[in-house]
Structures are given as C-alpha cells and as structure tokens.
Amino acid sequence: HKGVEVLLMDDPIDEYVVQNLPEFEGAKLKSLAKEGVKFGDETEEDKKREVFYKKEFKGLCDWLKELFTGKIEKVVVSKRVTDTPSVIVTGQFGHSANMERIMKSQAFGDNSRMQMMMSQKTMEINVRHPIIAELKKLMDEDKDNEEAKDIAWLLYDTAMINSGFDFGNPKDFSQRMFRLMQSGLKLESLDLLDEVEVPEEEEEEDAEAENLDSDAEEKEL
Image (cartoon, rainbow, N blue to C red; front, side):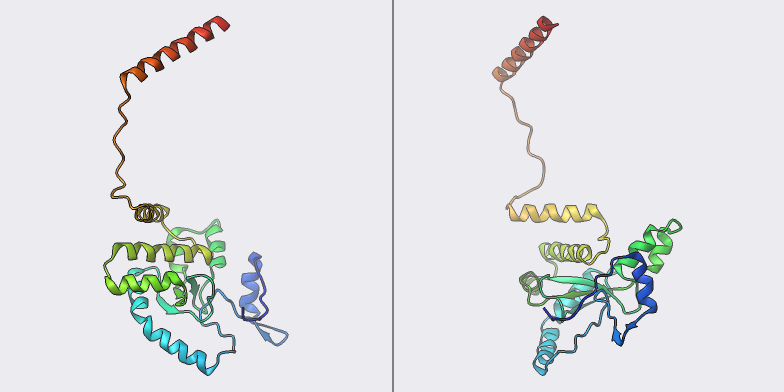
C-alpha cells in the first residue's frame, strides 16, 4: 500500500546479519517487526488525524494494556496496519519473533533463560478496523464485559500468531473460542445434554440384528 520495497528475509542467518548490517549501499534497513517504523510520506493532515485517533482511542489502549498485563508493554494506535485489526511488534533493540523461535530451538535453551530474553512487546491497533471499533463500543459501555474481554484476548492471540510469536496457552485460547461459539449460536449453556433414552422396542430390534449378524458369521465359518 505504501509503494516501498520490502525484503523477505526468512533465513535464520538473516537475523544475525541485519543486526550487524543496518545499512546497505546507502539504504537503511528497517524491520517491519519492530516499533517506530516511519515511511516518510506523512502529511500535515495525517499528523492531525494521528493526534485525533490517539485521543479518541486512549481509553481502549489503556484498557487493553491493563488487560494484557505481563504480556504487553504498551498498546498504541498503528500508522501502518491496513487489513488486520492489530499486530504485535517489539522494541527497536528487542528480539524479533523469528529470533525468539531461533533461541527456543537451541538445544541449550531453557524456560527460565527464555523468559529473561523475551522482548517487550507492543500491540498496534488498527482504529479503522470494524473489530476495533466494535470492541471500543463494548468497552465504553462496560469495562467488565466478559464478552469484550474474550474478544480482546482473541485479538491478542491472533495478533501473536500473525506476527510470528507463540500465542501462549492453547487451553485458554480454546475455552475463549467455545464461549464465542456459544454466544454466536445463542446457547444458554455449554453443559452436556442429557443422555438419550432409547425405546425398548429399538433395543430389542438392535439385539435381534446383532444375533442375525452373529449367525451369518458362524455360517460363513
């Protein structure tokens, strides 16, 4: 959408090369997986619009930051996301999602060390996306709305996946999905239904059918 050249660097060695090669033939390399990316084409109108959006969505950003305590350092209005509702990025000097995967795959890696080496993450939200707009409405009406919280957590999970990170606890993710399915299907409860009572006649027919099958098998033998 911006008309800029993008290099897809998916080889593990690329992470180490870019760290030591910030510039090539006069062109500075900027990681789209990091925060603070600027394209240099912002107009005065864009800057005014950015100030308005930041003020308008400050409540939602603060609410999401508090909800994601321990997982997200901050939530900000994005200037680059166009199609998705949100993305997860890291600081300029933090490890990218690809680098985190590389460290996790190393044989000497362990969970305690990995927690210390994890980068602080920033969520960038696309304020023009319908999901973000509707989530803001739900949050403005009731900050303790459980449905709004479930949607927010799914927003976090999907952003983590789309951005290349591990999204965390699969069990919590599946439970949130089930609750949203319950809401979408307008189910009062997710408790199991009662066992079906099979009529006696059907039970007798089934028993007779089983006996006939057994007799047929004996004849074949």
